[in-house]
Length: 370
Image (cartoon, rainbow, N blue to C red; front, side, top):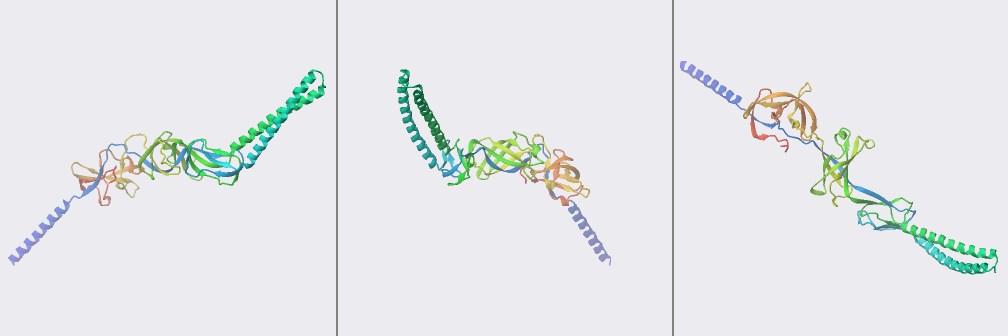
């Protein structure tokens, strides 16, 4: 019995020692955590907006007189030079009027020559008192009317020729046809647009800003622009115009950007991505990943900072005041300082006073989003 009792006591003691050793070993397990060290650097508050390429200069070309379109010589997308013929009217009637006026001018010139000859003869006869003053004045009046008739017909011919020139629509500048608005054989009024011409060596990009951001930009602010259809190329420009009123039934304000360089590959209507940095103060901001922030039942926001030195740290809860949410994370207004280290993963298992291990491979990088 004594032997059995000693064996049992020995077994119980051995078992208890093993349990204590396992408990000690369990308590010594310190798990690694993913973390982020707050650094002193400027974090750009870059926002990306969808826009559209527009020509800086655009003209709606039209005839100066009413008429029927005989032929249109261009189509949408055509590149044309200054002086190119765009469209013509059906001017058969006008050409007929010109021929009639030219015949009338020829006839009245004959009459004028005859009247002039008669006038010169009657003038000599009148000076010699061979004819009456009444006969002289008749010949002079006929000559004066003939001369006036010539000037009248010449003026009419000039008017008809001007009308013929107006029946030809000529491009005032080199550029590209954006739209063709009419069709051949259509009757149109004077001043009614036939085509829309894009011209000039500048390109605009138009986009919209919501009302909460409109006061964050000003004229001449720099932007960068990318086009899906032009790979691996970034364009730069500046804000040229800021709308002072929103578009109808929307809280969006129109913004116009003028690109620094002209590129013939950029066509009207191309979709653009406009990148705008809203942090113009150039001051450092504390930005932390959004998933590093938790909240409690008091609607307070907090993070876990890691105190201590070396690779073993102690987790401490810290209440923070959040600023705006950017594409990089939350801006911190109060509660954190530069060079402090915060936990960025496993927050559900984190608690006050917990020991954790820092591993370089688990460092969360703000700029790369790892």
